[in-house]
View 1 (cartoon, rainbow, N blue to C red):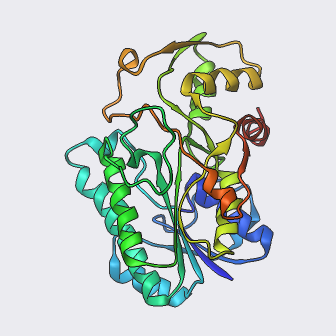
View 2 (view 1 turned 135 degrees about the vertical axis):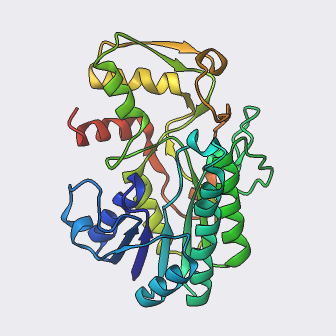
Amino acid sequence: MKIFVTGVGGQLGHDVMNELAKRGYAGVGSDLAPCYSGVQDSTAVCSMPYVSLDITDGDTVKQVLSDVNPDVVIHCAAWTAVDLAEDADKIEKVRLINAGGTQNIASSCKQLGCKMIYISTDYVFNGQGETPWHPDCKDYQPLNVYGQTKLEGELAVANTLEKYFIVRIAWVFGLNGKNFIKTMLNLSNNHDTLRVVCDQIGTPTYTLDLSRLLIDMAESEQYGYYHATNEGGYISWYDFAVEIFRQAGCSTKVTPVTTAEYGLSKAARPFNSRLDKTKLAQKGFTPLPDWQDALARYLKEIEV
């Protein structure tokens, strides 16, 4: 099986390439950079074929995928700077990447007859209430530009293909790139106390664990919408920060504040990011491990 992966310079794409190597699959990575620019932690990512690709260029996407002729495309590439996406001069570019780029990938997958796995987000929902969002729920109402354009990407995939997986994730952390854990640890070096929001509820997603699930999906034909975060229950960002410092042995104090009290963010954030993941087991997939266990393994990985 040959798998083409977009966004390998990011957290998830990096781990997907490593997982492909572990299973002995042929992987071809791509990103916008002229050569792989991520963490040089693995000969798997660095030694596998890499193609510089601008997913917003439809003709180039068509040519590259035709040349590679993959069995599966795992589409991790996206504009993920949520607040920056709200800037008036950035909206068109964000839509071009998250919606237009995804349509280009989906159209090529249709032409080639290959499977597509699209990585989406809890931000496609309005984040209200306390009921976990079911993967087949269509009551979207995204609150910000990022969520709206990722939803447009979902629709591009679903309206173009039959052999697709749309996998929504949340609160992502991995080795290759920025994330909440790294931010908290960096801030703890210069702050005795940190304010963290306590009214946004969800569950973290470790890219190492998620990458294994995505390859399991690639090996299957259980197509459709899925939610995939780590297990272990729903928590707030405040809860997450407290556990990060506890496991890391940091004495930094965390003060819970509401989103309104915290302020700062340009983009509206969902309060309810609870994702119902029961469909994974129903379709024969192994759920991700508990987030506390994932955090412990991640802290060890980054040598904290």
